[in-house]
Image (tube, rainbow, N blue to C red; front, side, top):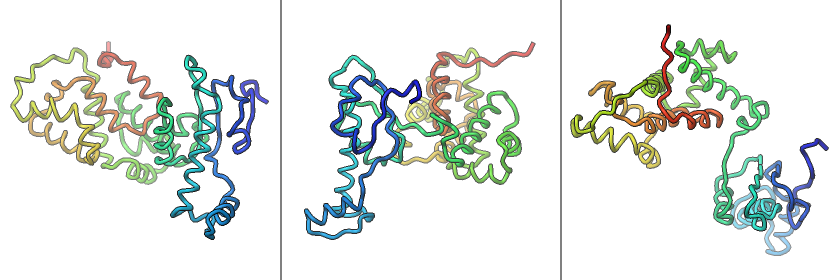
Length: 291
């Protein structure tokens, strides 16, 4: 075994009732385990008197399989016996295609467990699907060009990531629920405002009532409107309209935290490393002044 692998187990054999992982602080359980469907269908036939197609996971039989999957997931998470080690931090990686309802079920059954969904790309870029690799490369290149004050064009991005301009356009269309031009415009505007030094502390009382509401109420709470169904396109359009009527200076009244949150909204596909770096910025990021 590799030096960093101490013990090896198998789904179905060691994921239930095994105590060999009591001293482990990190576990990697590969695969979204499902028991043999043919055996499950036979068991269902014997106990319920109902013949089913093993792979047709609908109705009562489908819910039965779902419960067994969740039970197996719950069991494997419990192998390190975290309840007996309250002062230790235990991490379990479950690479697989787990569904939202399965994750929610585990969260409700194990309320003390912190669950974090992480894209394959963030753990191992080469293990991610080719399409996801292309998406991330485009987003990262997009951000690098903006922060280095270079031209953000589909041609430039295509050259850097090694794809055709048409393919870049197609991926951007699939990735972003807004146009490339609007996305670029909004992100550059937010970044430029975030990058200002000595942003003046202006009184909201200076603003007209409708603008004050937009800056003080709508922008800081935009995420609530997104949760209610407002799209990224609509958020961008609202900001554009406000700037069109009242000028870019209204962003000077917006807190840095709100600007950062808006950038996060428009840069949602960025890798974890980006957010970690951004969270470390306690003050507005200064713009280098050429000598």
